[in-house]
Image (tube, rainbow, N blue to C red; front, side, top):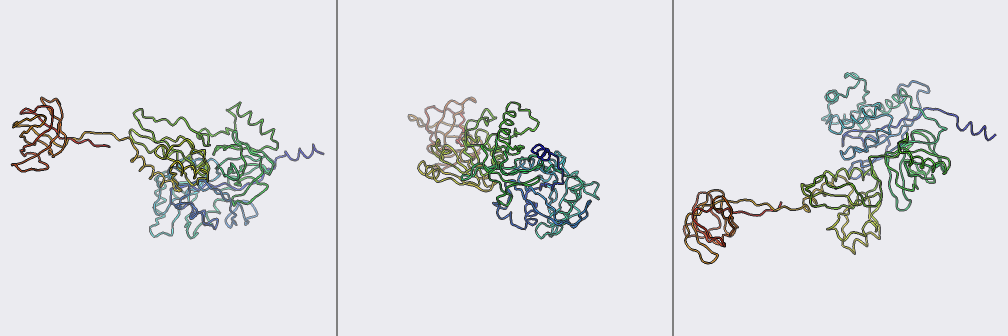
Length: 530
């Protein structure tokens, strides 16, 4: 009897699965607004500054009214959407979104047409060889020009149907909903044509799209199931991280006991932070999972390629390998960085590495996902030594008390470009100052009137620039600097003045240990810190 049951359990049961759709495009072209309309909730206002700053996954049901290849022709069908940030800093997130997705929606504004991140997103779509639909958005705007946008797409080798190519196109207004139903029907039709299927009797597998630390619940990760079935009690393995499924939630945060392919789920209780972008697989028994992890460690060339080589390990510990590339850099500004989720950490690191001066550079000495804790601050003396930055996180009570005692200022941000603007200003303020000598003017000594100890009264003529009272001067004789002095009095026509311009003669008192002679050149200079 048991044997028969086990045979049934391992039999393949291939059924159609909902498509996983990634929304891509340039920042502010309406990706989140489109999802907002589809889901009938407001994501944009919940995102700081109206910008999506990490991948989110959502399931929606759409009643397909359009053409269908198979019956029933009109029914509610599920679609899973991934929302990716458009900001340039989040390129790695967009690449992962395309890796996970079955279909890509390239959103292009009918006002702005193709922009820099549009091109980048298109390259990612091509590299991952996933079918694509172009959504021309903002068609309700006064400056919208649909035909010009289509021509601009073709100019960038994105060829739509009836414009030299086969890419389907939907003309939409994500704000008021025009054309959105047509877009959803196009997605379902394309999914039917591509014939996405999964085995309901297999153990679940898929991808980790986000990871974070919840101080109350522990390490949690958002997963997209691409095949198989997941239930409470399964053991999930992602790289060398694993979790016995006890707490599983759907995209709405509601507790569930099982999930199948194309579903986004949040799993709580990983033993360590899984690498975002890594694949995961499930096991019925803990011993099987442990054996699998052991094999992965012994054979790093495993076909599942579970480890994501592009990301460093997360956790609040010092990092190495971020040494300055320029050997002339003399000053390092250390940063202690804590963020909400692993994807934010990746993007912020990328932006920080861009901010540098020829002799000064930021270096992230400690980083992690989760709130700022006491252990993050224990080795810091003051804010003058290390910049402590929290992105979309808070400091816990003990950390806040320790920061107050030590006089450490913690800087909090929730928008990436605000953080980078602030860091650029800090770089300017904290950079290593270099002293440079700027020549203000040159004068030729014509006559020596008197010399008493270190003070000499002489006459001369300004040959370039200007000479100022109180400035320091270099004394040049036969093109060699023989000493320096300071102008303590300056006169013209026996009248005291503060400066004299080029071409004018003057009398002056110079304080110097070098005795001047007629024909010497003096160069007035100032020392400037840059």
